[in-house]
Amino acid sequence: MRVTAAERDAMTRVLRTCPNEPVPAAQGFTLGGGREEVVVAPKPAPPKPAATAPAPFVGAPKLDTRYPTCKAAKKAGLGPYRSGVDPEYPWYRDADHDGVVCE
Image (cartoon, rainbow, N blue to C red; front, side, top):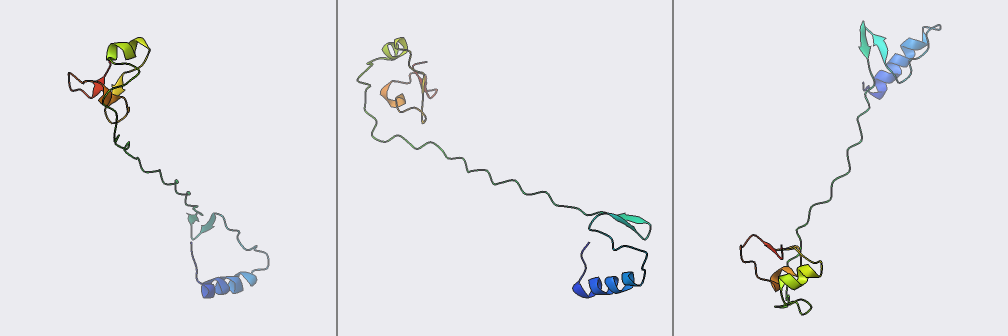
């Protein structure tokens, strides 16, 4: 509940005429037969960082000089490589065009 400064001053003057009644604290209290509640708004959640797309790979070499074939790369425990994610992807041929090589 919000009141103006003038309303607050008027309420204070009226309440002072009732010596046996304490001034209500900032919490819920009965007023006119209903219940008045103090509602505290929750703090807003911090904004989530914007998702960023992976940067395109520019100037990738034509071949991986370490492993000339997917078979050799897989034998070394590497792969699979995904288009737009792994810099090794353009080094190999994606025969089924699914965006993954050395599967």
